[in-house]
Image 1 (cartoon, rainbow, N blue to C red):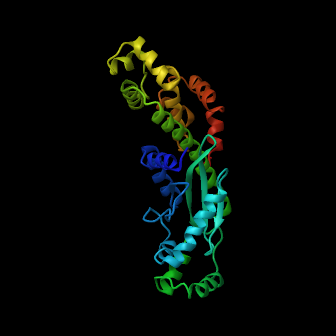
Image 2: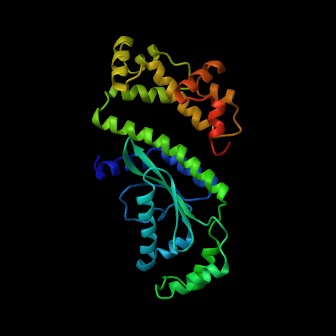
Length: 295
């Protein structure tokens, strides 16, 4: 895969509703910034994004201090190729990158940071202020100090939970990346695209093969044949996977019982839901929820 292909995939993921919904939820829950960036990127990852750190934004105003921030991004790009990695910049703030992989290929990074993992001290800022004298940051020392001490402090335990949460989502994005590549290499028939849209819109209902075939104006036999060839799985398995993916997202809400989730996504039997969930994910719904950071 070329770097341009990787960037195209990241661009497609970034504009997807899946990522945008997750990003908003992540911003709301953690108060941290989040970005999805390609492997080769020479821009500050959170510039202009929600929850951007005020201190980091000030540091980015001048090329001399901005260069230090870019060096931190480069270190992440070099170390987070296989597993999540966290590095600390010269100002003592932590940055974390979680790799997004497509098979053996590294596509990009899910990244958050601009936080302290321990409360900074006055002596720590004093040392920084002396180092910055010759760099000449583009803002006054008082404003810089205020922004520095307003930086969010995340405990090691909370930080670990954030990384686990991003790792779960990174795995999901990797699957979506694979679907994007397959779609680019083997464009699916418009009929199948329309059928998928119909299934997504009506997944909570008691969907039948005949109903979906009718919705895309074709016979049941022809639809079944074309759909399986395009997706690699039969209609029933596809609908189950759509429902389970929705269930996995709903499982993030601790206020929803497993039985409520099952009926919300279209299963009429809790036993059937449990069996299908385990078949697709390899674990029971209860076990899956226990693995989530919120659990």
